[in-house]
Structure formats: C-alpha cells, structure tokens
Length: 252
Image (cartoon, rainbow, N blue to C red; front, side, top):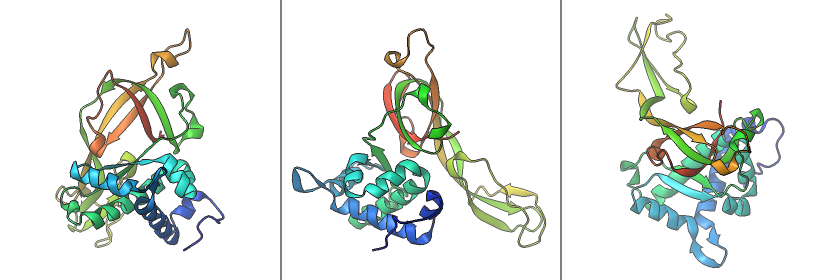
C-alpha cells in the first residue's frame, strides 16, 4: 500500500501522478467492495447499489459522502477540493467494479458515473464566490428554465487538409472550446484542419437555470440564480418548477 497522504506541492499535481492515481482507484474500489451498513455488517452497501444500477439499466452510482468520509477520509477531503480530477478516477474504479459483477455491462453503457450525495455543507446560491471555483458544492433552488439537448465535443479528431493525416484524440473536458492541433506531424503544415465526423465523439448536455427558493431570499432582495450543466444520464431528469438539490463542481 502506497502512502499518498504525505505530499508536497499543489494537491491537483499530486493527484495527477500515475502512482497516486493508481492508489486512489485502488482505495475507492476497496471502499465500494467493503463498505457495510453500520447496523448490518453483512450488508455490502455498494455491491447492492451496483446490482440495482445494472438491473435498472442505469449509469449513475450514488455514493454517500458520509460513507466515504468514514472509510476513506482522505479521498473525501480530496474530492471536495479537487473534484474534477477525483471524479475521473472514481468513475474508472466504479466501472471496473461493475464489470467484475456484470462483465457484459459495457455493451449496454460505456461509462459508469459516481454521483456524490449527503455533502454535509449546503451553500446559498447568492453566497457562491470565486473561492468556490473548481470546488465541490451543494445548492438548492427552483428550476426556472431548461434548454433542449445539445451535442458537446468530448474526444475530437482532426484531419489535415494538406496531407489527410488524422490527429487525435484531443480531450475536451468540461465543455472547453474546441482546440485544433498546431502543426501536422506528418507534413509540418498548420492545416487547415477539419473535424473528423467518423472518429470524433460527442456527448449530450443540457442547461438549466436554478433560482433561489422563495424562502431563502432576504426581504426586499431579488432572487439570484445560477446556470447548471447536466450531462449524460442526468439530462431531462428535472423540469421547470421542480425544487431540487444539486451537488456539482462550480466552474466559470
């Protein structure tokens, strides 16, 4: 077992080291296999949840932050402070554990997504500041608007217009704008580049507007709102008028 808790430097750089990634995946996989209910030691909570997820043909595995903090407190702290990096590893570990129980499930769903619940701190929409940037937060409010479903680049491949060389994949994380290659490694030209529609992978996304609940608006103030991006199997799960609690990563 590798000691990943003693580190120097920025947390995100430490998490992105290969050895640290391997240990995080191992610890989270062990948590999914071993965590038992407090009053029922024979109840393997997440093995049951994985089975329920597969039986119901879903992609989301709901994990309690409180459970994680009991068994793997370091992972719980890190996922709150560096959620983008940690969730990527959690998703990979959850998929691996799912395929151990249901080896053919990948033919139904390519990805499994870990959804954290029971985050102990809830922020008010009007209190979200720059200090929350890239952090895991929980807010509640009323859905006032919902867009249609749009495609978003996830893995992009580009074809060089001069020589036909195929460059990629270029990963587009968190809806980042398309980034074309610089120069072609085959003919050294700078393009022009065109998206390869055959190889490029898109994912669906949807925007909703979340507004403060009337009871949380100070007297004499207008309600504040934030835009929420829904991805993958979360799309179309809420509609205008719903009062919801959202846990996610705050980005600009």
